[in-house]
Amino acid sequence: MKVLVIVAHPNMEESVVNRAWIEEANKHEAITVHELYKEYPDEQINVEAEQKLCEQHDRIVLQFPLYWYSSPSLLKKWQDTVLTHGWAYGTNGNNLHNKDLILAISTGSSEDKYRAGGLNQYSMSELLKPFQATSNFIGTTFLPAYIFHGVFQADKHTVQKSAEEYVQYIVAERQV
Image (cartoon, rainbow, N blue to C red):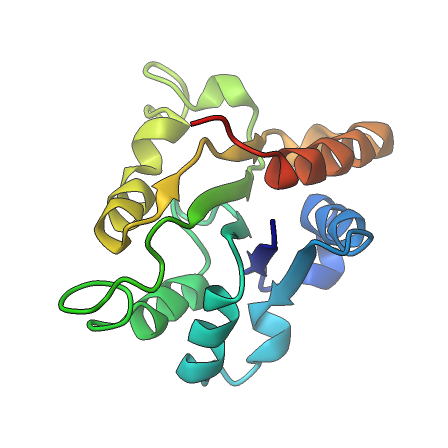
């Protein structure tokens, strides 16, 4: 299985968790790491190249820090420009059908902040529904997200362990 990790982190130099995940993913031949902010500093996305890259992989992972209960803006722009009618949905828009989609997300707050009655009032499952709806619309199989909570409190050992677990998770075969 070939895995494409599309990373959207606007400040990778200062990232702890996302950078560790990328470093670990880069050790595996089956994983292609594609950093949007590095590839498109001017935010001018090459739609044809992005679509081709997606077509060449069996599983797509969208990796990002949670920003305002969603993804950083370049990932949203990527979705808006790459997931086109006739390619990702609509008449003949079946190029992503039967591929897996996984979200890999880091949050600053601890897990208990993401639930009813918690600081953020909503669970991660609720906050990620738009991504799941998009997955359904484009014909991908939406797999459970890999989420790292509490970036600001994490020690180096915990971050490294999460990177190893993350890579194992995104390359694991799924039983249907």
